Image (cartoon, rainbow, N blue to C red; front, side):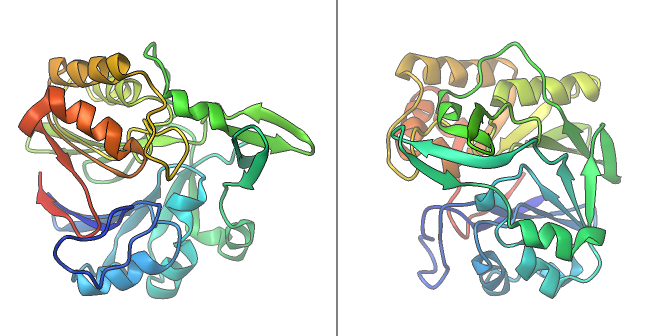
Length: 282
């Protein structure tokens, strides 16, 4: 399995011409198929894909991890390039996704509403576990006993003038089975990365987890480098990932630089950082 980071918060260390932004998009090649996991905040992921030789026109299926703009902002550009692949996503939340920063600044954080209407036939709502391609599984409604990220406290659903905490029932986790092992893709892990790994392990019979790939949402207020969770909680998270065992983790985006450093201190070479343009074999 080959994963190419089409866009991420941090610039490429190898090609300064690649765009970067607050968002995430991954191209995944596995078993002769290709997948797009999220589309970043704009169409810039597609320009990067061309430079990185990731053919978006031939993508067999796309997955949207949750209904936030920084993961689905490039959908319109994707539809311009790819005329066939369905986009799989969780059920729409009951209200508009919003962020409240510093208690007073309110920002719409959801998807472009028009694109959901303009391209309604391209979307497939996932309401129960589904295998969308051979060995590619999606799981909505991630339950669990582990804590969810403290940074979720800034994220809401707005209905009229009422703001309620977002429970992230619109978030899904993707798992790809290859050679008897699993690779788990988390998007932002608003449901808690440990809960997501638990869900995959339970649904797929306890197969070993080769890798976890995605953001862990340990940052407080994007894009500032402040951890939402306590240092010891982030260290406990790292130890839990090692105990599962997760052979390796690749993270970035909403994990944040400071939290990444704490995780790295515990996980060592079993943790790698994603940047725009990063390619890796899993």
